[in-house]
Picture 1 (cartoon, rainbow, N blue to C red):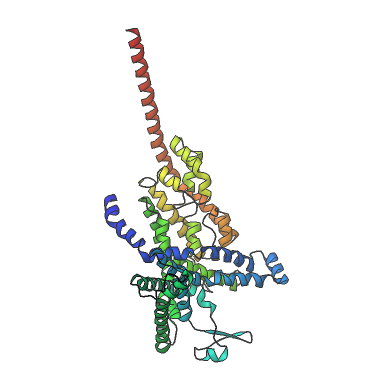
Picture 2: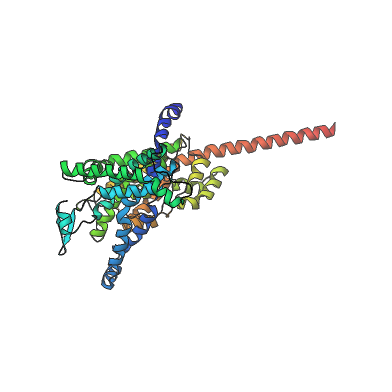
Length: 461
């Protein structure tokens, strides 16, 4: 089984994960992380969970300022994604990447059109033909956040690929070496940028003339919404909860693999929850379109304290283990585990390639994520608010930030449960290691006794 997985299953998966498209997607999405975190702070401030504080900020007029900062960061993440993906694709090919990112941004704006006009304080849906005469045209922020994420990914990938293809084949304008690099780089981008922008203009015309919609809206309705629905299910939770520790068992970073593929969808879910949280004064539920399975569910109930939720194993090792190996690793790993770092445990115990510990290692994320999903579904726990926090945020604090005090208490309960899930398997592992250590000590003592006896016998002779 191990040979089959390592020789047959993992190679094509790793080949896919390391393709240029997936690499550009992962690295491109990372560009948005600082702005997600900044925007999350202002999202919490604009919809503060304590009514007294929220009312005070409303009365003093601070809330609109928090909203402005949220809209300019968290609310336009598709912009960061489209620029970052094209940028990283071209950068990996060894070319100047910034013009490619700007070309992708222009293309992303090009395929959208005004869909909502604000008139006399009310929103009125208008057509593309009406927009220029009524308002002169504007960018609808609706499609700059989660609802435009898949379109941004597609445009970023295609723009990066086509742009690099032009440069690889030297289909550019070359200026003499005496021309300053800044000017020369601008002319290098001229031909590929013109062709790419013209191509996306034709796409816009095609959708507008035939379907009376835009590519962004069509992708959201036909592609993104079904994808979000598939992931936002109990089945999606089960699959992802099992896949991450499954890959880790073979020494492959499961969170990176699964996160690189599923991250954009889960982030799109989170962005919609954040928008709902902001628009409905902190209330997110199924009635207003909230999603249960978002990035926070994975981060705070699947990989919190590290993949496999190994804090229970660490606690056993640090305070109850008899073997020197488990005891020392547990004490060294306890503080890193509180900041969601558990590689010392995975490779030190080890958990990787350990058929005994793989059972709780795969079982714990499934119990945690599955039960949390069901409790949110039945209304016992609140929907996660879509706030994104750094992955090193300690548990309990992270539960409070992403879901309020109920989610904080539930996260604490799950972490305590992890100790009891790991305990019988860790206890067995500890007995094995302790026995090996005692056998080694007895063997060493026997060897020393034999050497001492031989020395005495030699001295007598």
